[in-house]
Length: 331
Image (cartoon, rainbow, N blue to C red):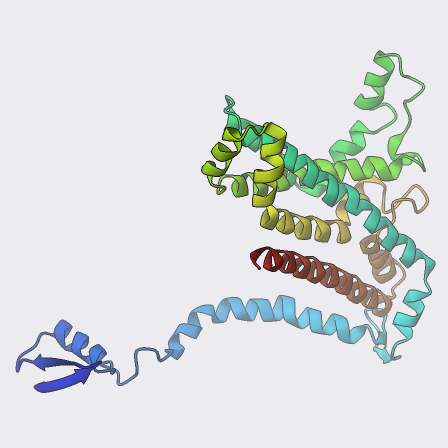
């Protein structure tokens, strides 16, 4: 290659004999590659790398979602030929008292799965990040373990703890509070609270880890400035740590809210699917009962669609409110 090329107003003279590397560099300067394509052109071969994952996502996620929405307009047992019935499933759903009972219980469990874990996670973060403690890694790991445990295992452990002859009632008997002892998961009043506290025990570790990661990114100079102006520990947390963790709190809220609305396995193990009576009945358990026990698969899919819409709406609203508040602060 010989002659001159003009690129961005610069003249580059090409010697008569160039190495392969030099020729490639000059080709890029002139806007062409050795394959005759522009540098910004997308090689379609790259899509082959994501094709296996995309196919798996299509088969096991997208297609089931589309079919769930489609079958919500059919009367279907799961085995029979689907019969189109329009909006009848949704009409019956909104008239179903059990559905509204289950939805109300889901929102009740939001207190234990979302609000309490976030508050507890913030408290632990303030303890584990502003003070140097021995065995910090041990404490963080131990507090996070409940979240990574299988919900079925957690349910079996707490079912034993809450049993009439379990450790909790034995401790109450030992301290002279035998009148308080009861079958906690079989009591109509205390079963929802006992189940909810197990959810708090599971979720607070996740919130704590998210908040600790966020707190480590807060500029230390902000704390130094607060100390100079005489701020105590609570004021440092309120005016420095808490504003710096807004994004992390939003992430924790969305994740734990979804967990509360999708709650199934813990209820299934702890209270045998919503007992006593229907005091711990949640939407996922009701959906399971309708689909696999009553063979109302079409009706169950409409329930799944409504539950998904609720989760999406709440998540989008919370995200938008957070974005709006941040935009107002920048103005």
